[in-house]
Image (cartoon, rainbow, N blue to C red; front, side, top):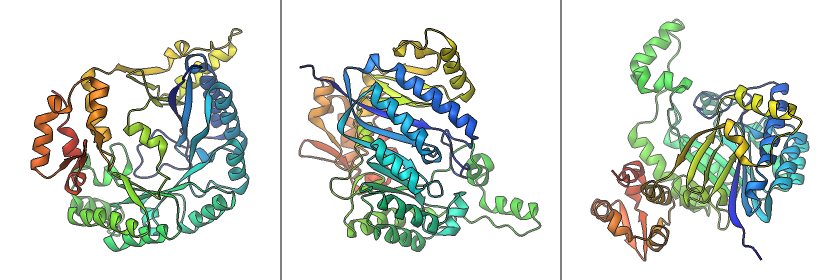
Length: 417
C-alpha cells in the first residue's frame, strides 16, 4: 500500500465588508457578481490540482482572508465540495474557517458544519468598542457576543478568538480587561497579536515612519484639518508594550491556556495544527488570489491581480478542452517562484521553529540537513546563550523569556551570509 505525503491546504477569500485601518492583507470589498466570479475561478483552480496531488493526503485545510464568512453558505459548500472531489482529505483533518462578527448567521454556521468545518477563528480584536472603532472594525463587542452564541449553538467546539494589543490609546488595564473577558468565555484557543503598523494602510499614514512618526506633528495636522478638534490617541509606549506582553501569558495561564507559540495560546489538545505546520515547514498548497505555497522546497505565489486571476480562468472555461488536470497549466497565474537553497532551508528551520515555545530539535536539524547544528550555527547559538536569549537543553534549543521579547533580533542572527 502506497504511503501518501502529508499536505496542508490554504484557501484565500480576498473579500471583506470594509478594509480595517491597520490591515495590509490582500482583501477588499466586492459586489455579489465579483464574488461569484471569484468562486467560479477558485473552484477551477482547485480542480486543476487533482492530478499532481493525488499521492498526497490533506491533514489540514484553512479558509482565510479577508472574511470568508462574507460568502453565503452555498458558495462555501461549493468550494468544499470541490476540495473533497479534488483532494484526499483525511477523515480527522483539521478544517478551519476565519469568520468576523457582523457576517455570521445561523444558516451560514449550519452550512459550514455540513461542509465539514470543525474549527472557527473569530476576529474579535478587543472587547472595548472605542478600540474596535479605532481599528476600523465593522462590529461592536455585542455583535461578537451574538456571533459567539450562534457558533456555539451550531455545535462548534474548537474555536479561536483573535485579539490585538498595542492599539492606539490602549492601556494595560483595558488590555487585561479584554483578556479576562474573552478567557471567561472559554474558547479553546486565543491568538494575541501585537499591532504592527504596515505600509499602505491608514494607520501608517497616521503613525508610520513615512508619515514622520511624529505624534505631536500628526496631532497638529489633524487638529488643523478639522478646526482643532481631533487628537490622535498615542500608541502605547515600549514599557507598556512589555507589560502587556508579560501580562498576556500570566493572565491566560491562570485560565488554563498554555503558550505554544509567540502569539498563540491553547487549552491542552487544541493547538492549531495548520499553523504548526507552517512553523515546522510542512508542505502546503495555497489556492486563490495571492495564495502562497511551499512544495518540494520551492516557494511560489499566485498573482495578486484580481483581473488577471479571473480572466485566466474565464479563458479556460471558454476553451472546449477545458483546463487540464495538472498544475503545469497554472503557470499563467504563478509568480515569485523561488527554489530554496540548502542555506535558505536551514535559515527557515531555525527562525520558524524557534517561534514555538518548545523550540527546535537538534536531531531533526541533523536528519534534515546531514550536519550537526553547531557546525552550522555554533557561533550564533553560543552568542545568544551568553546574552540569555536561548536555552540549549535536552536535545533542543528554545527562546528564553527575554529571547521571546526580542525574537526578531534572535531570528536575524540565523540568517546565513
